[in-house]
Structure formats: structure tokens, C-alpha cells
Image 1 (cartoon, one colour):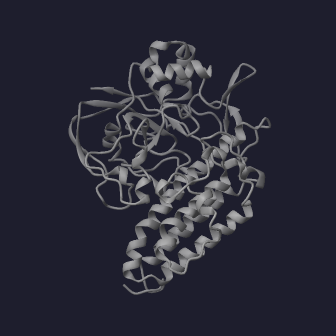
Image 2 (spheres, helix red, strand yellow; image 1 turned 60 degrees about the vertical axis):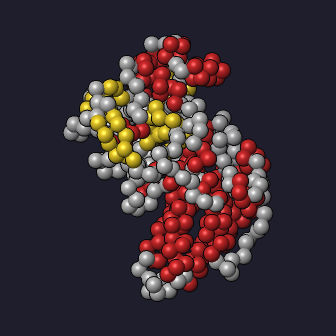
Image 3 (tube, helix red, strand yellow; image 1 turned 90 degrees about the vertical axis):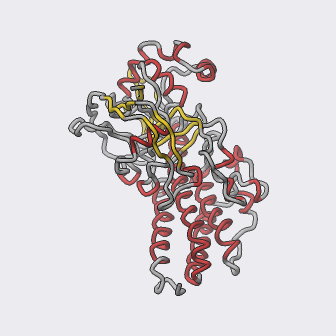
Length: 425
């Protein structure tokens, strides 16, 4: 394969995608003040500055240091500060103390990004065929990794702003008028032997493979996501006071937190409001209910006489649908009501909210982690987590696919998470 970006038809598209993804990360930061970049409002939240640096560290560590002989680190200390959890690469700064890092400054982190970007361009500019093919998959992995952190930038800054007594907004947009949700319908699917998992065409994470067979009984999925109006009915029926609806660990969490409403909800003059990236606003009963834990989703499903889908059921149902929906590119950054005028069938399978499934996050039959530190990306977390599917209003459209397996612990609520009901037969 010829060298040089002008002569290699594969290099130009990769460089173009690299530039677009990196630029979009910085676009998401544009509404922020310098002070916003450095706050860590809870352990699960990372400062925006850390996300900007860590995504650069990823390219530096897995692409530049191994494959660009001339590469010089901007600061060797960054290897310690911005390593997240890759134990094979050495010690890391304590996750819970990322908000204590006043240095490097925000300006220095942006300079770090420019340093890494220049080196990636240098690498691809001089790569021969063999080197390009060795680094192409790692760069693509790094870009999808950055898109995951773009979503985290939004979910984390939402939490940061929500704990500020001033209730500031990430950005201001024109207010939306409440809509109306269509009547919930049930869409049936046949059982039998089905194939799930990635087929090897295009990018996928290692946890999406190997492709394998599963046996499903007859099942049905709700035509849309559960709405805030329906969740209000659950609350009014004592949903948070009825232990028979909850898993044991979920009930303990309810008792410990004393919460009786979804995360980000609060009462104002007797009415429910929710905090959004546009600031506080009254809830819209037609919108999908967001920021639910697995425990809340499971309790609601049991109250509704239904259940959560398995991830295999979700994937079989979603595979025939184009991955289109309310993604981050729409600029809404909030779930929207399903369309009343839509023809019969599944809505909101992609975008709006990550959908909890009842499936524990475990390896597929035959799964093997990649050798070396990059193999720590997914495999080490296959314990005490549940699978979510479909993406959210903070997910990039170019990042999602039917086989994508997201994962969170069952108590997590700060992500854009919701639910779709399922039932047997």
C-alpha cells in the first residue's frame, strides 16, 4: 500500500473521522466555563477536563507510544494522572480524587489534545501498509472510546450542574411544549433458535462477540418506552412503599436513600419538576421516564404485570430496524415522546434512553479478551452489572448498532436510562 495521505484512499477517511470525533468532543465543551471543567460532584462523575485528557491518553498509550518511534510525551506524569483502570499499564490516580486536580490546567489539557492529534496525523502520514493495518483498528477503537466519553461528558456535567443551588443550565434552548404519548401496544415475536452477537462486519467491541445461537420462547415487547405519566401512576399506587415489588437489594437501596421518585425529580409548589441540561422544568407526562436504576425499572415492570426484556429478545426485535432516533446529533439532549402518528410497530428502540434488560453482563460463549492491556477494556467488568441496549439522547448515531452492549451496576441513575416492558407469549 502506498504511503502518504494523498495516495492512500484508506487513510483519508480515517483521518477525517478522527478529526470529526475529536472536534465534536470539544464542541460539547463549548457551553462550559473554565470552572465547570474541574468539578467532580460524586465518585461516578469525572471532571470534563479529565475526560478530555483521558481520551487523549488512550491514543497516546495504545497507538503512539507503541507505533510512532519519534513520539515524545508532552508530560510523563499524564500516564499516571489519566489512566483510568488499565492495571497492566501501572498505577493510576485515585478515581474519587479526580476533582482535586487543579493542575494541569484546562488550557494545558487542550494543548495535550493538540499534541496527540498532531502525532496521530504524523503516524498516519508516514505509515506503510503494514503499520497502517496494525494501527487502524486501535485508532477506530479509540474513536469509539471517545464517543463513549462524549456521552459521559454530558451525563457528568448534568450531575455537576444539578447539585449547584443556582440550578444553572448547560445551555439554553427554546422550551418544548408537552406532547401526547401514543397508546402502548404489544408487538409479538416468534420464539425458537435465534442468532445474536456481532457478525464481524464493521466495528464492534469484543464483548459483542462471538455470534452465537440462543433459544427464545414466544415474547412480546411494548411498542414504546414507559412514560413519566405512567411512572407517576406507579408512584401514586405506592410503588416506593411496597416491598413486594422490589428485589431485595433494590428495597434496601430504597430504604437507605429514602427516595420516592426518579433521580433529578423534585417537588415545586406541589408539582413535579426535573433537572435537564436546559435547567429545571416541569415534567412532561408524555416523555419517557429517565434516570431510573435497574431496581426501579424492574419494580415498575412487576407493578405493570410485565417484566424487563432479555438482551437477546431486545436484539432480535431491533435487528430489523435501522438505528435511527433521538441521538446527540439532534441537539435535544433529552428524551422525547413517541410519535402518535407513527405506523404500528416498535418505536424508540434507538436513542432517547438506554433500555435496561434483565440480562446480567456476562461473556458470550467462547468470549476471549484481547491480549495485553487493551483486553482490560470490557472483559474485567463482567460481574455485578446489567446490560442496557439502544443508546440515548446523549449517544452518537455513528456509535450505536443492534449488537451494542452497554453495562451499568443496578443502582446507577445518573445515566440516561429508562425501560421498555416485555412479557411472555
